[in-house]
Amino acid sequence: MNFKRNERDLKQIRGKQINVIGITGGIGSGKTVATDALRAAGFTVIDADEISRAMFARGTDGERAILQMFPQAENNGALDRAALRAVIAADARRRLRLNEYTHPLITREIRTQIAECAPPVVLSAPLLFESALARLCDVTVCVYCPRNIRAERIAQRDGITIAAAQAMIDAQIPDTERAALSDFIVPSDVPPDEFRAEIIELFNQLTATNETTRTRV
Image (tube, rainbow, N blue to C red; front, top):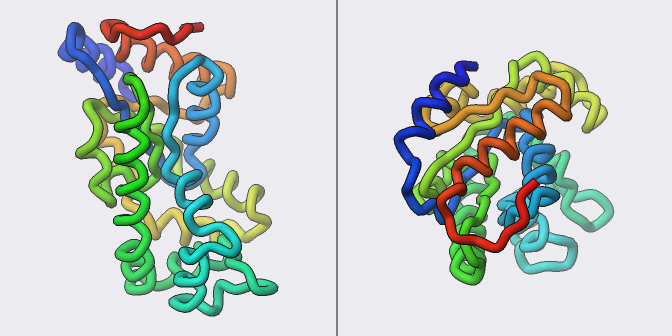
């Protein structure tokens, strides 16, 4: 990816107060590695995936509602998230039905958490643009990774075939579209330490003008 674009856009935002930075990336892109690094660097991270897991955890009303909609995603009386991902990856209508139920609930909780946190706040969301969460952000960052590497990561992580992993990737918007919509881009197909350093450096620069007591690394 073109780091000159990041350098250009950083010049345009210098001096502006950045309260919420959105970070996104397709499944298998390395977004979780990025958010873990940001947390370790002292940033406050609100993670849409973590909120979703809590809201639809075992025994919650949210889990029961999803199981009623998608009984094929049930395993021993509980929601099997891997099975659910496979179901919605194979059927766009089912994916839309799930999103119409979950997105408003997750967005409401994200808004609440942002209001309760001192800026700057990092909002991590794989569907940052699809769910319109980007509207809550002052700037957005895309973690970008080639499709073949993402598929290999997903297959290894979930114990599935490359073809199944590619179907999960295809269920989301293309990386090129996600990158074009984002203000900044950080490739993750580099050594992990280099990737973490690039992420932290970018976010430090984005928030350099903010008045904050957060400890930087």
